[in-house]
Length: 89
Image 1 (cartoon, rainbow, N blue to C red):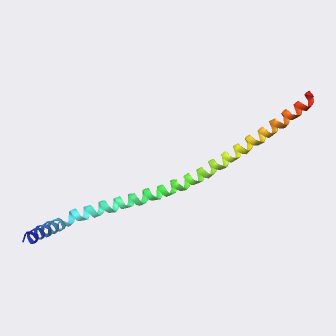
Image 2 (image 1 turned 90 degrees about the horizontal axis):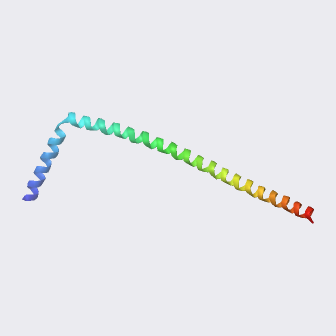
Image 3 (image 1 turned 30 degrees about the horizontal axis):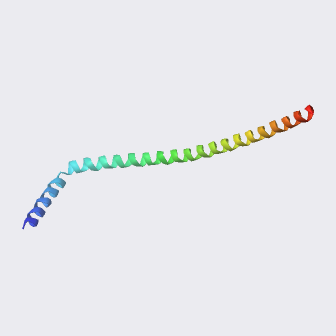
């Protein structure tokens, strides 16, 4: 019996809540606006991720180039030091 009573109250509350179509329309409008904002933010995030990936690749290439330049400079310094050592002898 209490289950039927609870079900009747729940149904009455739901029906009275849905009876106000103006509020329902306002809520639907708000939900639509929020959905559009979420879609816009998702699009912006996707663009940012793409840019971040591009930046990461550029940084990686710059790091590799600087490491190669350092290695070449060290090799050149070693050759110069070897040449100086042979002239000293």
